[in-house]
Image (cartoon, rainbow, N blue to C red; front, side, top):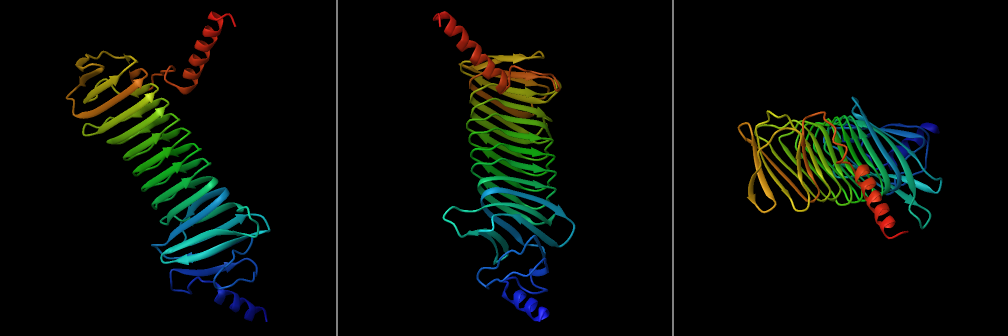
Length: 333
């Protein structure tokens, strides 16, 4: 009887039998499912997959955490309300997880995934924190109110959040990272970088790249990393300072522009005025190209590992508070 019931359950799941792309490796306990709406058994499920499969997760609230292993299988665990159900769907070459709620309000789920290192990941959420560790596949992440964290990965990564911090550590490969109302932090990354924000600073440390573009509207931009002779680097902010650490013996041509700020270098440079508010200086052979633009902020050039505390959000906030206090004193308040 038990064997017949297990066979019926597996037949109802829309996952293909071996040797197809998906195969059920283990169901932890029996759950009644239909062919159209397969339900994720509790507490976890392991599914055998073949290379070329993409994992897609859509989440309203909660979190998505993905780690990897060397097995050709994906392990899925999810914490959620008893009123919600997790659906596994196969669409083409994708394995999709989503929530079906019995309430009007979409469910909140905390996913804990262990996937093959090669697996492509497409993860999205609304009120969702998302983190991925040690992946070797392409990664695309989008969330509205949540932080995004990427650690120890290799491969192309596109990361986006509206109200969350983007943090990338120890990653190799092209990185595209954007946040609207929070900062973007990239640490010890290797490969091309594109980073942007609207109301947040951009911090890039320990980078090895010959192509970097970092821009924000309100916030500082800080870069400390290698300057490749064949590289192109562009740093821009409207309301904030720019802080670039580079060796004095770099081979680079720098174009610097600031409307209502200054230029501060901790090592000797000769500035040539190109036109109003725009200057140029050359270090070494001048092969690398750097463009630094701040409408309302100072441009700092410094040696690696030198601190420049005045180019931080915290210090700028303190300066604003100090100016406000002086203004209040002048008015006798």
